[in-house]
Image (cartoon, rainbow, N blue to C red; front, side, top):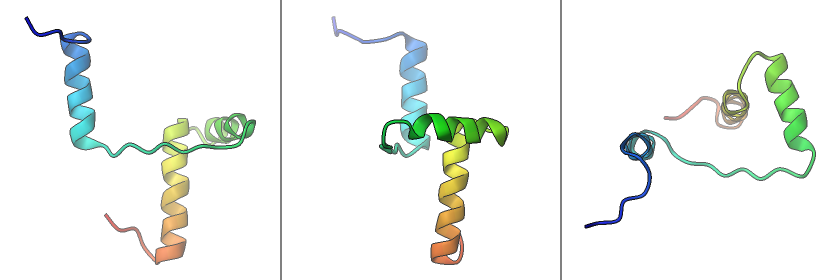
Length: 68
């Protein structure tokens, strides 16, 4: 019998995420995460939403518009 890891629900979520999202691995200097988290909370966003909004704003300034 094949050895499967995780529950069926976890495997389904992982499969969905792999098909629908690109994974980014940003590294920040120690202490920056707390500042980013505080800013995200102040903006009423999750850290992920905050980072995406920040990257979209920067890309728009650099490229003159968002590209899909």
